[in-house]
Length: 597
Ligand code: ADP
Image (cartoon, rainbow, N blue to C red):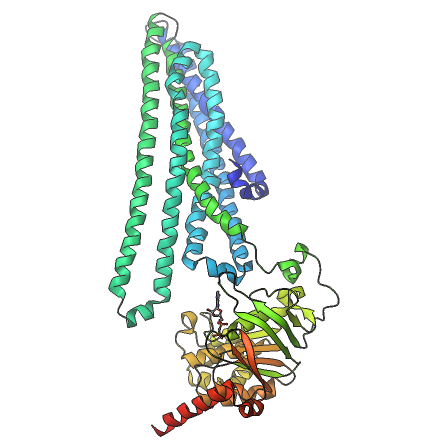
């Protein structure tokens, strides 16, 4: 195996004992096979002389041969069983560990990684490519070792029988080397293409399923089906291309092997006629050749598997090479990864936020989303953030939750640069509610308490999120199972479950990012006034385009194109008669029209 599989070495090492004994069994199996070939040859030679009825001695000797051959066959069965069991078993366990590590790695990666890679693509790497890699670990190791051990043993025995014959038989077999070389890179390339198309296909399926409701509403089923068929056609075509290549490769191998057998019969009979070889020796030779042919064909197969595996390995390796932007240097779960957190960092957050001249640009964006932003939120204060769509409100929230890295020296939490905070610690004390919250297919209680089972606490947080009466109206209450992403709840209910979940963490800093957009104004007011009690002493950032939502905040910032353009209390901003005032007037007017209509 080459350096392309370097990442697998530690895993192989972990299961070295099983692999070692598996290989011992493999060598034993081959050794027994060769013994059988020799015994059969000797037995046949016993039959030749003298012609006529068997003597008692011959009879006894032949019986002994038969018993020995049968005994060796039983021995072979046992060693072959253990060889497969140990090696294939180890390969399955290596696959298990490797896949788990892949998954853990995925969880460590930052959101920016998920901006770049599509879900379906990642999934196909985690499944289909992993399978191809597993085939290299188990069967390929086994057959490769088999070939490597059988061939020298068989060739040594062949040479012992007849050097000329060995030379003649191996002449055609040598042409295998360039053949292998020719097919190697071609198989690699084609399989890589197949796997890439597999990624496209699973991305397409995944997105179609995720958006199936939108597709139905817009009546786009036929179009999606057509597009799917197109990608699927490409996948099939490239798979057939690969199959064609393999379909040529293996028969060519067989042809060359057939030539070798032809040589054996032709040259062998000539040698027998001239008294330089016995029939028994030819038989042994034939059996030996037969037993080296299978490993050779297996070698061809292994080669295709290794090329497939290495193409897949490149795809998996690409993901493994990705590092989280936010280095887990202080991740408390992986404390051995980097330096310990500085003792100066207070473990309990007060929730003082200071933003100094912050300019931030998304890695994939052309221009900054935030420009020269300055802001201070005192512990326990509530800041309302409003402004037109795309002005950078959510970006600010994402930076505070450290979903992206701001430049050093621009965002401070409790006086410490956010980059110096252990991300794990920080996130534990920050509650974020998004506009489109993600809920898991679990019970409402489990979603609120995020993993733990329902008890009184779920109710307490649901109360604060004005969700309790909704939940009480469900027959199963807090044990109601949510469909995928909470599909059986209304948008407003989903947002309130997410809010209850954020409250359940008892965060020192709560960020509501347009979190109540789907909740009606009346409920929203009830929630906000309830939160005022619950969040006493906690810092809150409320992002909304609704004036009614932000107006309750201690202080309000109005953003435009990445900058804060107006800042003050509701009364101050109204008195200013600027952008905030315009927005408030417009919303008031719209509400009045709605009421009278
Ligand atoms: P708001 O929340 O005020 O509507 P956002 O903070 O979501 O605005 O977006 C601010 C700007 O950043 C927009 O121009 C948007 O296109 C851009 N943006 C948002 N998210 C990303 C992202 N993940 N990658 C690149 N650009 C983004």
